[in-house]
Image (cartoon, helix red, strand yellow):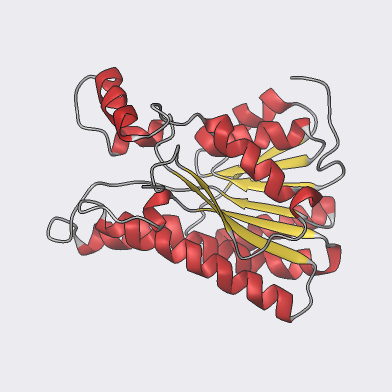
Length: 256
């Protein structure tokens, strides 16, 4: 790691889905910028690996983001150990290809449970702990698919669009209640993670990524740090006048 910076020094940050991909990258960068990190993931082995890679400023917990009881248990542990939480990064998510005719009700419910319901549960459960410990920042991972629809992403489009508007509702609620808590969403396009494999055609991964890259005006897909740095910005006081907004990271895909 590079030398410690101070953009979120002294903050307590919970990152769901922190075992891999964007969540792991965000956890590492937030730690480098001075935060105490709680890595949560249903894959507790990999969550512990992330925490161990970060070092003494991180701890990992097993966590099912779709289960209200699991959220309550986790937040109770965090409150007991740290007394507060300042940053919530709702990063856990899954992807699935399927148009409206192909998508089963079971698939629909599963995508919405992980990608949307988890954010509702996380924000609802964390807010009472964050209210008395402001300033606070909630960062919800949506997708460019929450802004631009695709013919074969029926459930994913719906869930990620829901994240975008839920974020705005939470931001307005916190402002109206005069909570010192901001809430924003992040909307990446194709990012080079294992989750990308869920939507890539079966076959040669490098060829598939090359085809995806040709769709992006910048000529490449994104890396996890491209998103993690945006999360650091939203978590820091640099973005203190930003709430109910979205950061789009799509290489220009939505500009045309």
